[in-house]
Image 1 (cartoon, rainbow, N blue to C red):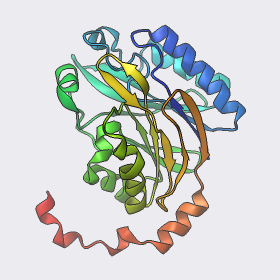
Image 2: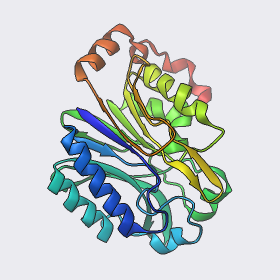
Image 3: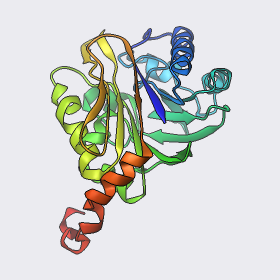
Image 4: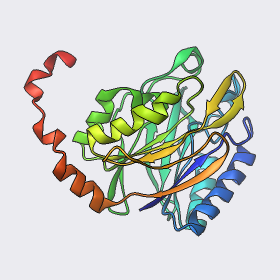
Length: 262
């Protein structure tokens, strides 16, 4: 399945402009033969937007979700995107996956909040594994800091995730996460990991880009630079199956020894 990763910070504070950017990216992704477009964490509104997080938050089935469903259907590309979700009187840092026919397939709420900014503006989610079926693959969703914890990624592996989508807002000086940690997560859990980061200066944060699609062999199939970019690479089910057969980490586990981890 050809997968496109949008590396961009869009226009912080403007959902109208960010929807336009997503529309443009979906058109370019479709022209490249992609079946899926992954946009960064909080792409819909911007990340470093202070109290506008609460003002711009909307339900998972809100107006912007409807607009993204329409453009996904128009371009024939599934879209995963980050946004602030208002639900039950609180705001979550969320990511939603919408199919190429405009169906909302999955909605994930970030479970591991990073730093004072996120803890001030968001309530953490409580469901670590959120999945959907897309083009014959089991697709899971995490957000940025979540992937830096081995336990939830392993939970996805045990639940059968083939492709883990990670909308991200990672900043200097944590480049090693993109360069080293993410490919290792893909290898040790025998899955593909699509890591789509923001890029450039935004408020107090300097996002470093370096988005990439890493495979179950630990090889990053495509890597973006530091600026805005649309990255396209393939998720190959045959490679996934062969790699899992050659590297049976999940079968060789000894869960009885790991009780202290919980």
